[in-house]
Length: 396
Image 1 (cartoon, rainbow, N blue to C red):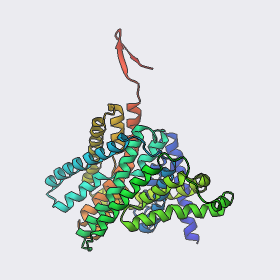
Image 2: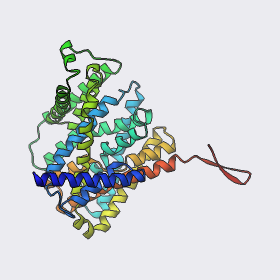
Image 3: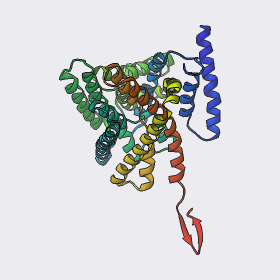
Image 4: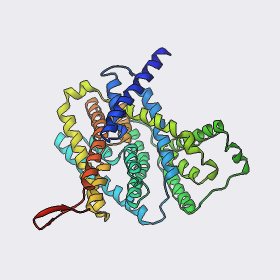
């Protein structure tokens, strides 16, 4: 117990100190979480040594995050808000493969390794991106909805990606592994279409009895959030997508208005643990011995992802300011990329060197993308200037 309390106290103190520093520079707390993981991990202080256990607990934060997003989102009622993300993610997949082929050709990699690199281009971090969408109040705008729907499509892509990696890793392939997720996705689409204009879903009067019972509220909320995540994971979809669907449904139930308040503290704590686990994974000794390729790979991913996404947003008729900002938001490799790397390594699809390099690059893109987003946010929001009578005047 003393060891556990000691670890929690050090973690809390580290997050407080880093949080105050980053608040001073108006930077997101996600950076503090990742840096705390690096400092407290097995490669520096050794306060936390079992990365897998903390990562497993931290993944609950992603489920709660997606659940809260489901509570807040407005289901798109216009066709272009659905079509645009489909087109955008389709182009992202094609361009991601093109970049992966260039990397594979330069490094003389085989097809499976090239495919895995392409997969890393497919997925972005829902936690990082939505944090910025909510922070700057663009979550429910047309621009924000397009970005968030792209992230949801990436969640849907996880099912075929994991199936492919498991098959390459030697696991048995069954048709139901592909057909069932497709059927469920179609059912989800029809469900959302049915309830998008519904103001409130009525429940039996019995459920009103827990309105003032905070203990029951807490466990009902956890059961709904985690239960839908478990169901989605069992079907072959991502558990995060299941929790998001639960959030959308609960958002239509006025009897559960208290739920967001009851689970808010849990979300903050577990999301913080998830990003701490990202920092814990960064092997500094490996990074220092391979820093050239890792640093180059990190900035290559950030730059190429930014350019790819910016071009896609411009083709979708967003102006260049929004396009570049959208490119920055989708510049990093996400948490699903880490999952894909782990499965590929355990299935002997990739070698240790590629696994560790990919892991380090993913961690660093998550860390530096938050800084890159904040910088580009200031640049694109700078008022345009004109030359008037020989003087440069800013447009107010």
